[in-house]
Image (cartoon, rainbow, N blue to C red; front, side):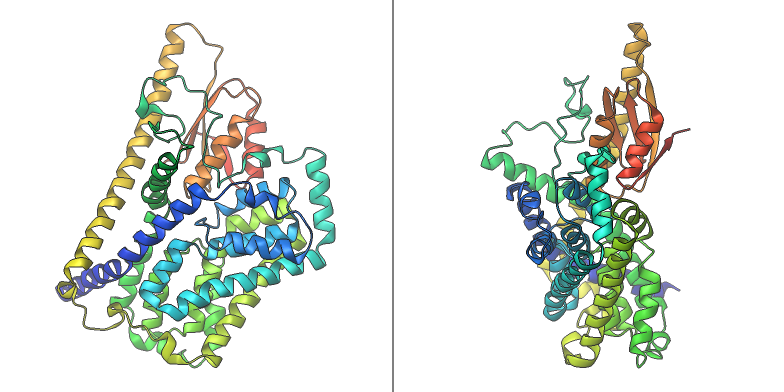
Length: 466
C-alpha cells in the first residue's frame, strides 16, 4: 500500500515539475496578449459572411486562453456586434481547444509534434466548421439577425468576456479597497500607461488565470497520476490496434464533460502511457475542451439548431480525421511518451534544482490565487451584509437585496459576463458575483424573471438563492 502511495506522489510531482516552467511562460504571454491586443480587433474583422472572416476568427481565437464556457458569451457578443455565424462558429471551435498556456504545456509533456499539430488541427477544424455554417445555415443566421434587430437577447451586449473591466458597478464602499465589487484591485498606476497595462496583465496571468485553470489543472494531474499508478497497462493496450474504436470511446466520454485545454493534457499523457493511441489522445485534446453539455445547449439556443449540429459535426469530423492521420500517416516515434511519468521508475528525487525552483514558484502562485479567491468571496459577503445593515439604520428599506444562485460559471470570464449582464437589468443598483460559491448579490428593485432570462441568454442558469 505504501509503495502505491509513494509511486502516486512521485508521478504527481514529476508531472507538475515538467509542466511548471512552460505553464508559467504560457500564462505570462497570455497576460500580455490580454493587456496589449486591442479589444476592438475581435469585432472589426469578423462581420463579412465569407471565408476571410472565418479565417480571421480562427486565427484570433487560437491564442486566447478562454475555456469552453467563457468563450460562449464572448462569441454571443461578437454575433451581436455583427460577426457572421460562420466567423462565430470558427471562433467557438478554435478558441477553447488551445491558448498560449495550453500550447506551452502540451510541449512540456507531449513534445513538439503534438504542440504543433494541436493548434493546426484546431485551425483547420474551425475553418471547416465556419465554412459549413456559412454554406448550410442561412436560415439560422437570418433568424439570429432578426432577433438582434428586434431587441431579443439584449443581454448579449454584456458578454465581452475579453474585456474585463467593470465600470458598471456602483461602489458604496470605495473607502475599502478589499471591498472592490468587481474583484479587481484599485490600480495606483493608470491602466492606460504601459506599466499600468503590464501590471494588469501580470495580475490576470498569475492570479485570475490560475484561479480559472488551477482547479481543473490540479484535478487533471490527480486523475493522471491515479491512471499512471492504478490502471494496468494491458487494459488499453488490448484496444491499441482498434484505433477508430479508441477515438469513438474518447469522443463519447469527452464531449459531454467539461475539461479545460490545459487540464486535459496530463490525462491524455497518462492514457497514452497505458496504451491509448496518439490519435485518440488528440481527439481528447480537441473534443474535451471544445464542447460540453452546457455550451451545447447555449449554442443551440442562441445560434440555432442547424448551426449547433454543424458545429458539433465539424469538431467530431476534424478530431477523428486528424487522429487517424496521426495514427496512420505520421511516424509513431514522434508521439512516444517521453515523459518520466510514462515510465514505471518514477524518481521525484532525481529532479534538478531548477525543476524544484519552478515547481515551488508555480505552487506558491497557485496557493496565492486560491487564497485571494477565498478572501474575495469572504469580502463580498461581508460587504453585502454591511450594506444591508447600513440601509436598515438609515431606514432605506426601499432598496431590495437579493441573492441568486448562478450555475455554469467556471472562470473569471464567466463571472465578468454575469456581473455586466445583471448590471444592465433595469432597477439594478449594484451587483457582486462570488465565483467560488456561485452566488450573485444584487441590490435594487428589479424584476427577478427578467434577470433570470438575461442570465439564461448568455449561457448560465440563475435561480433565487435559498
